[in-house]
Length: 141
Image (cartoon, rainbow, N blue to C red; front, side, top):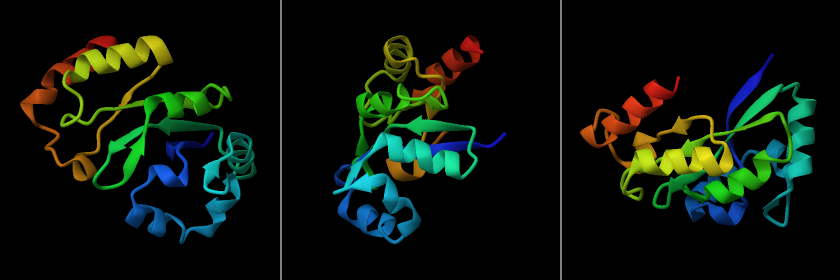
């Protein structure tokens, strides 16, 4: 079984200009887009062609570094295949209450976990602000 743990289900216009330019260098992925819009069926076919059993679909809240792919957009893709697993993305600079945000996304969208991106979102993973989130995630195991 192969699991791709890092799929951003966004359109090219969701990316910052420099990250979009970098992404465009990887032409093997371009067949899943039409006019910069991600076509979910093409993504599913691409993953099947690569023998990927499951893929974790990630929102992205890194407006300065990478771009923004909302949880709503990620969810709209994730619900199209039982091979997709939706995670939340918590940016502590944008999200006022990480625990509340995750629990809401878990309840509404079925989010199964959390992606944190300290490099893109400029925080330390040991920031005390995140301790309540870590405690909640441990409690939910």
